[in-house]
Length: 76
Image 1: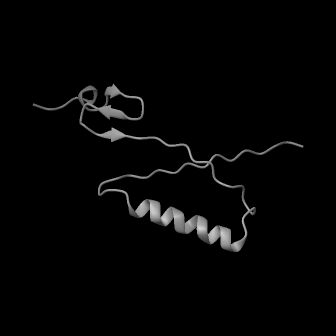
Image 2: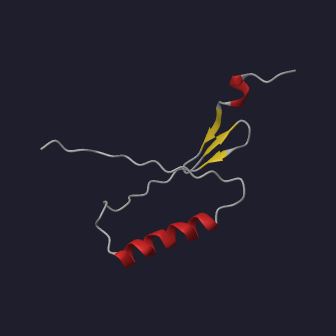
């Protein structure tokens, strides 16, 4: 017996803070606002990256972290 795509992809439950798939995978989404480019001093930038490294380090095994940057250009 083979599984179909519909058996694997549908969402089983959407709670207030996460999504659970029928396969049991849990998805959490967070919005993080990053500082504008070239606005941090050297020490602030170092602190910022150390914070990211610490946060990534506490994630559990088999966790996937996806960051997405949105770039906007204003026409003057």
